Picture 1 (cartoon, rainbow, N blue to C red):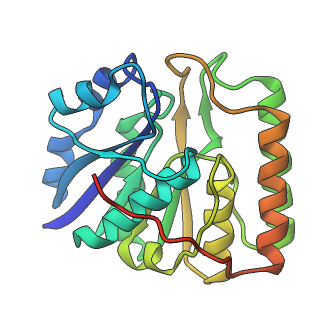
Picture 2: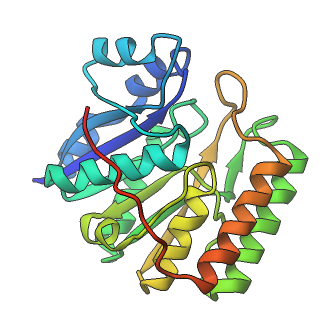
Length: 243
């Protein structure tokens, strides 16, 4: 059996979490030879998300140091490497990503001997209202900029659905604190010449309000792509992985 970590970064997602966890196809993953555990990284929720996660049988980590999705993922990756698990798949906890797509990401990763696989919203199906026209255009612009800078194809650089091998995560030097983390993950993959694949996915309406900050976060993403293009190895603060 291959040991799989399913990572759910979360901040005030009590409304979406029960249905999302119920949709994770654990039996299918087990039939595919994957021994899966679900880990929720809580970013300081005030709505009881960690308590609900424990009631659902999830392993709960509490984000330390500064707040932000980038810090949460870096801490989660450190915990994953210490755990000894073989593969990690991550998706946001707001219900916008469909857990039913998870086996396809993992099949593509393992079956094609890849290092990283993303779930592409922009090549998949987007439910009506799930992504505003402004964000749709912005995602295309940021993805075009990423490919132009790094010369490594990816159709959706800001997706929140990724699958990694243990070796891939161990090579990624990251220092993002916020929503620019996915762009930095792409940059690290390109710099390290990792084998990247993708599969089209369903992108659904999220439960609750968006946490992405529009133009300011888009500017941070673009800035991160530019900085990492010319400084491949960032100064990296130690991120503790404690619960």
